[in-house]
Length: 155
Image (tube, rainbow, N blue to C red; front, side, top):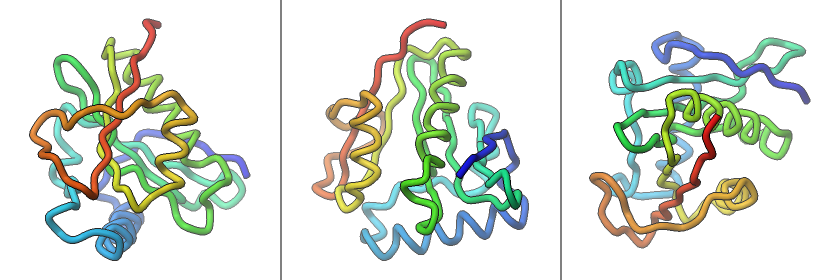
């Protein structure tokens, strides 16, 4: 499958539906205190860039991800791909676009928090050069969380 990745506003009805599916998926995997999801309002902050992946054949949104820019790093948030499209390249395409955007913003690192019950996501991040790190920002140690980082080369 081929995907087009583009900036989007997270308050569109089709994106809100995708985020609701994401919320339900994570709620099945983790207790509320281990879910660190940004809501639509937080995704619309000036320092946040929200992307969607669309199937080129039918223009259906199949995934999303956000890049939150801080002064010294970027953070990946709300990375989610529909279960039926996992393993088809949508997640990798989203990650590639996030990394390109982070480089354009001259961010030296991309960091993320993901859950230990998501081996496919962890595998993708590791395959793309992300290494495990200690909790960062406001995160606390959590046995259900894994923190990762990738150093980005300059553009």
